[in-house]
Length: 385
Ligand SMILES: [Zn+2]
Image (tube, rainbow, N blue to C red):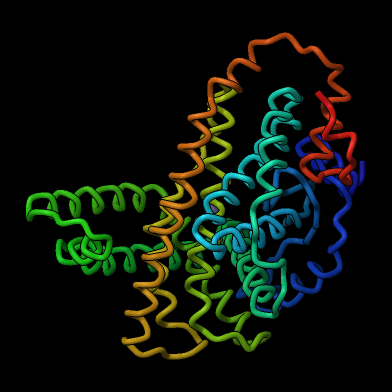
């Protein structure tokens, strides 16, 4: 079998796909990225569009492919819009998107009755949620592009580390140095205090010490095991800055918030996967813990030293405050809200799980596809019981 056919077979067996209309756009983006790469080794791009929304590097025969999922880019764009909506809309739209994601992924697992429950939730929320318009302006489009550059570069760096031992060693060393510098400065009790004050919490000195120590221990455990993740983040953040400086005229200040958001979106999707695994009583897929706040914090180290500019300390303090506020907003309006609501709904999905199916599955499945927008919307899909 030819390598190309093997790749097609691999994708067909691991994902639910439809044609990727932007393949040419991603080819062009990928060519630009190849020009920025430090080494000769570089995978070939294959663009897909799948419910799984996954970016991965795979080796087949002697060839290496980066499989990029266009639906992931679309998801990042939607979640950006969710994040920047008014607070009430952000909370509802996050739940709306969670329902869509759950419905689509339950459909893949052929749990159509459950999928229909969430597809209906998606559909009814969609009617009352107002999001900022899609890709209405150049800035929004550029931000999504840079966030996708981040995701792609991160995966490519894992691959480059496998090809080049020297690069791997020096990158890991750099990640550890940055970690130590940030941990000694960023996790002092005073830093925890100012963070707490920002959110109106007062802490006594024992609490402060304890929180700083706990954070530090968690960070260090993470670094011991996953320094390649941090190194890949660094490489990806540098690629984003490099890419932005060469090919766009975006203001540097937008980049750190864009990166914080893409971290948080990826983490949000992973938490939904875990929710799904728990609902279906499947084992959770063991994966790298995301440590997204710590990784976003470490980014300051690399961003302060980028080719894109030399922002003054004052700018950094503002930016850093902004990044912390984004984490807090994401925690409260998106994660806490969505998972609280989903768990309050739980009795119904659990009941559905235990009931015998009453409608032919094929019909149910089609209704889910229409309601979630995977297939074009039709009125009779809404009438399906
Ligand atoms: Zn990674």
